[in-house]
Length: 411
Image (cartoon, rainbow, N blue to C red):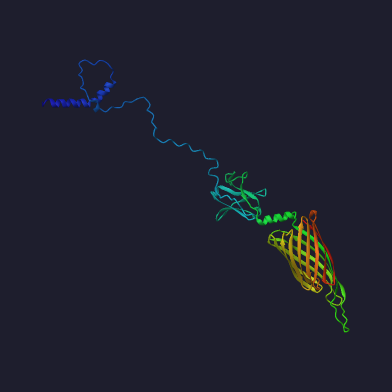
């Protein structure tokens, strides 16, 4: 037993150390009969042996991509203008106030990429350009108020780049952004009145009146014999006037100047009466207090037979300023007299009928009353004709007729 154990142990070591050599040799040895007298190798458990890889000429198997994420698609090539054009943030404007300057505001990023950033806008059929300027709230381009007219305007924003081409940033010249400009109520009123006046803002007038109060007693004195020195004189006067008026048709409806002369005979001033006269200039203006209420004011600067004098006048118009209305008016001139009147204008088409009641002491006389009517006609091509006729008296014992004419031309 003692002599067999070392022998078995040595045999196992020899077999294990030569396993690799035997396996490689057996794999490469040609098939054939075993040499005679060779000893048979003991069996070896194959689970104890690690296989040794052998080189192969075949290509390695493909690597499986199952379960891995797909590769992202290639990004599109950038445009030619990428990185060469500023960007813009702008809130489009929808409504603007008529005749008020309009500020177009934008935030512009990378402005160093632009030679110029401009606002292109169309008003009244005309295309204009305004450059954007830096302001505290960003970049601003201001459209002048005279270009902001009803009913609308349009605009776009574009940039002239450093690289050369002009690039639209907001809208385009071919398709601009619209901005509504509602009509102002004053504009609506003005256009309406101007249409009724055949688009004629100016008018030149010339008038002539003859007023006869009949025979009036003068302020005579009673002499020592008790006989009065009073006499009867023709109480009358002539009045000629020319005027120019311009009609803005706004809060100031119209303004202008009147220039005239008055010559007459007054029963006041002596036994034979007195000759009276007046040369005057009178700037005048009519203001709109309401659509149906207007106030006319007049300032007189005059020269009378007694020297320089001044006066004022006014009229309240109730109703349509160029149609049917009621007028209460008055004027006074120092040393010459005062008068007040009421007139009712009744308009039908291009014909006006105006009955007038006047009370006054012009020219430097006792108070009297005038009743007359004026017929006015709007003729073609801007011409105007008015005819006046009536009766007046200072007392119950006498009176007389009056007449007048006015010619006018509007343009």
